[in-house]
Length: 435
Image (cartoon, rainbow, N blue to C red):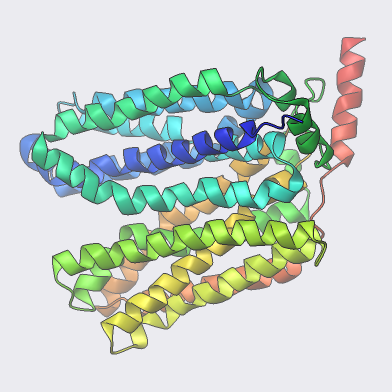
């Protein structure tokens, strides 16, 4: 028997897509001091440039998910990576505020498709018992990108300059696109090099087999009739609100409130991301083992790991009350690891509950709401710090939202099972229209 492992090659490309995604996001932050000086952009305008990414990124999650479900993840993710890579490269040619603002919007347009597409790929290409493993794996790349990107990009800017750095970093995605179009196929059955044994392993292990072209994706607003969709959106919002603290305000917190010097801060700020990356992969793998061994039901497993993760995330509220900076950093590492343990389940849930051929749009809807945490979280933190002079109550507020997330997953999230009703209706409507 010649059983192939094509799905894990695809998982590697999914991981790389998210890693490149986060590296490309970071180039502007590292280059900002040079841009402000060389292009005569004041800090206020630079703030608008940085925020522009989140506007287009959050607003286009649902359309990007619909496109991936309707026309296939091969086109959805391939076009997206190519788009945002070109946008990144073109930033090296920027001449001022207008061009940078437009290109940053363009970056958000492209990157909006990354997570919804990956969630859809995980549902098509992996048996249910591997879904959390691959979801934790591809999302862990965001922590890798966040932890590694800043020192790498700063070094490249010092070696070359900011314009060449944008061109080099952006070109990485174009090489990825070439590999993607040669390696990926829309469904396991369509891949030229996959064995029949691997196709059987994937399809026989799926409760809901996605990829039937006769079934159209469900309209996003119809999904809002289901309480599990609401629970997924609310819960992920509370997780992301806390998560965005680690890539926005954490360096300032460590320097301002904990008195760290700049070099030590750089290392300390990367530690929570590195810990989170490791624990997310382990949590995804462990939860899949629990389901596969039938120790717990799928619903109980998802809830258990979500709640354990968020209980650990509560440590962010205790971090400001310690006298030792080492204890503070340890608590922050535990909190970040908790959010990633929960995230391994968050990105598995769309494949668990979505109607047929609607995984990417469910993921896009969930990610639209969750990214509002990234939009308002840094602002609320800044308001609290301005009013109080320190970060204590900002972190306590973040912990309070985490507690809401725990209650949400405990009581609002119901049985984790595919939404079937509307899939049958849509299939019936499609068959009538083709008659």
